[in-house]
Image (cartoon, rainbow, N blue to C red; front, side, top):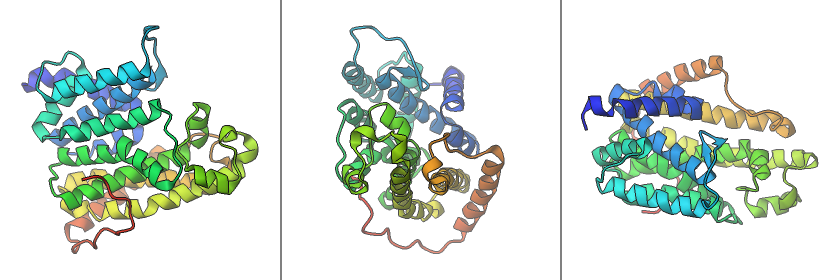
Length: 313
């Protein structure tokens, strides 16, 4: 597809990320133009699939046929994804964007479909008994996105891909901690059931204000669980082109800071949605630049800790 023909796809991707993720949008500006374009178009597909399964548009409810269901929509997403990867003509801009990036960057079909499996876990109301169960969910909805984004940045080395997956896991653990109460209102819970039992929280009453002190303890536990994955991800920076390293270091800093705010807010963490201000993002952007430059002269990274959850190969 020519640059002129695909320009509307990129414009659609820019609009999608501006509405869908201010944190990732900030970091994405640091990529070189070609990488930024492909990363945004891949993000558009991920966001589109999420919204379609939930019957939303950019996070807001959207009308759908009465005969429609999340299960039907998921089957359609899988079919369109396979067709896009097979090179068939795509009319939907999200799938046309995905097709262009996936074929150019050689994104494996199993990774794209693994991401859709994460949405299936929501549709099936999957139960997460232990931390490993929660991490499996994190892999499908975020870890595999890290793998695909790394391929957009030109990464092929499996050890470096492990680090990219680790960053996705850390992001999602942070999201779970931040959104515990919001998710509970939607009938979803990603906190391990064992943890809830240990904290004396009834899974049916997670959002009860009386549970906030106990929830704060669990949120801290999630944030602390994310830390070694953030550290592992930082060790992958030297393998990236320097502008990609800057973008990833910044995104890492922004999401990690959200987790720190959840932890510091304690029982009041869910009085408002935790995030970072423009000034804080600017500081983290500068910090990310320093980390990216340091990565240029970094010594060989230590081996990935064996106790971390290992993605499927």
